[in-house]
Length: 224
Image 1 (cartoon, rainbow, N blue to C red):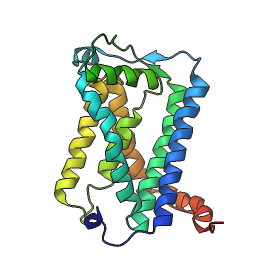
Image 2 (cartoon, helix red, strand yellow; image 1 turned 180 degrees about the horizontal axis):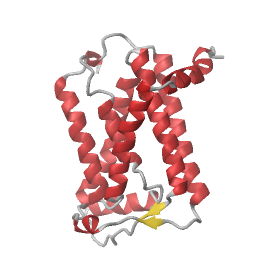
Image 3 (cartoon, rainbow, N blue to C red; image 1 turned 30 degrees about the vertical axis):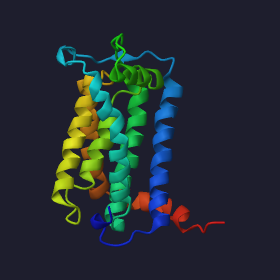
């Protein structure tokens, strides 16, 4: 990890941007679920989704990606301030758009009945129990994983091998959302497109400046 960072990051600022990103993610996900839980939910499953095989073992990728997220978000939080602000502005913007879409297009899907008793079947049952079939379009799993690749793909200080791994991991996570029946193809495409568009907007508009100004009072506030 240290070899990927040219300079020692400011631990306070790193913790701050990561904390804000996490809290905003929870507000969006849990808030939208609470508001729209009794609304009609659309099923956007297509013929293509129906032919995608159900592969319980891919739940290992679906759950394992959280470590990938932690590492890459830390790398993005610990980078030079301009790029850091752009990345986390894109993250905040994308999550805000997710919130709107979760309410405008509340989506659901039909999950298979898990009858096996293997470790993968058990983990799938756990996943279905803790994560309701809502807040599906776009997929936050795909969105965050793609942002993890966007955040490192042009970072010369990060080994090429790790950058390539990040792309492979982002693609693998996207596939796992389909093979675990957590999402459908529209959710995956929506998450990836939203990640790219948000990053472009964060770098080509004044949104990044607004984001930086917005967190500045918190960043400069001394600890008690």
